[in-house]
Length: 432
Ligand code: CMC
Image 1: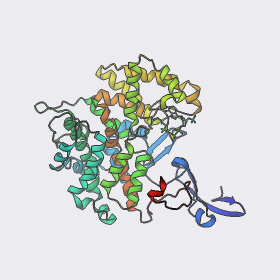
Image 2: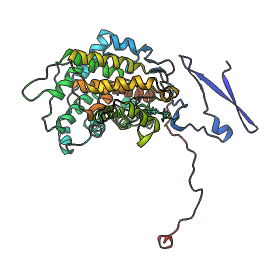
Image 3: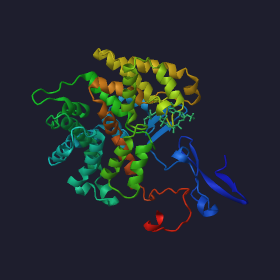
Image 4: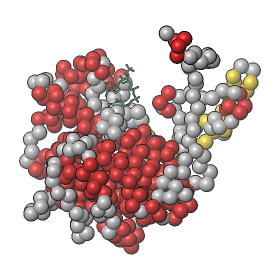
């Protein structure tokens, strides 16, 4: 294949270089387009636009492939842990035993948040959304350790290991504290002797007098859920983190913007929306068939939440893993959840329905993750927070990739202006 694409616009012909990725992905580099022709490219929703070159995560949406740093998600789900996978994503390789020890010690030793942050929690109303608190608090972390959040790229990079450990560790503490405050419960301090997932469950569920007793199946399910969310290349929130980071913003400011971007129901908020949908179907006495018809007709803006993906057009490998793990967990805990039965029925019907088949709409990771989280005891309004805890390694790795590349340019897309071309200001007295 030639290493250039020829573009002809009117009489003007230009040659645009082709970039090839290590897994055969191909792109036309249109960097010279505007300079050479006066045109810009237009791609609504960036469906065909590569915004960066990255070494972190590979997805082949047609084949249902997801790999972190080259390692298939299925192998990691089977054999790794969330923290080991986080190291892989952030640093590029699986850690040696000594590297893992260092990394997990840094995380273990940095779970506390500054005591003064508790005062900020107290100022929120008890029904404040935990995603709003998480985003604000993760940004605020930088205020308590300003040497980690200088907005000077070289300095922020020099302290990256410490800042990354803070983010991965403290995001759990902030999340659990927001839950405790919303229930009017005292905040539980983290315990150094507990492992990552167990410590989170303790901060969430230990009562003042009784410690939460970790159930191994629940701990494993939580670990798996976090691992499956750990990165997903250039989705809405990760692209946001990269964009904010491209302007030189520090790591905490950048991940805080990622949390905000994750919140929407088409992205990380879908896991909440799925459970709300399943509960609505259950309450209506529908077995799912009526809802599917509504989603197909787009009636009242309804969509089959947890279905469809911009990139996966065959299956979402995370959904396969989490669907099976969800069954397993519910069986082991002896839980019978009518929402799981409805979800199975919806999946079966949609996969055989022409509308969904034609549009290549399959269950995504959010279709089953909510049912799993509910079984773990996580309240619905915390589901997207759990996604954010899981996605932290991906955001950190992407921020680092942007910050450490000396060729990084600030992200600054163009637009096609469609408004008034030129008109005069009219004083208020003349406007009527
Ligand atoms: N239910 C019904 N119809 C759908 C759905 C759905 N869940 N998703 C897409 N469609 C239809 C859509 O109406 C359109 O139909 P038509 O061609 O007739 O206009 C067609 O499929 C293409 O949809 P699109 O909105 O152009 O696709 P997109 O790539 O822009 O959006 C999506 C991808 C994930 C936002 C979308 O599929 C969706 O809204 N799904 C439900 C929300 C959801 O589960 N989001 C979680 C995504 S996975 C977690 C994450 O990484 O964020």
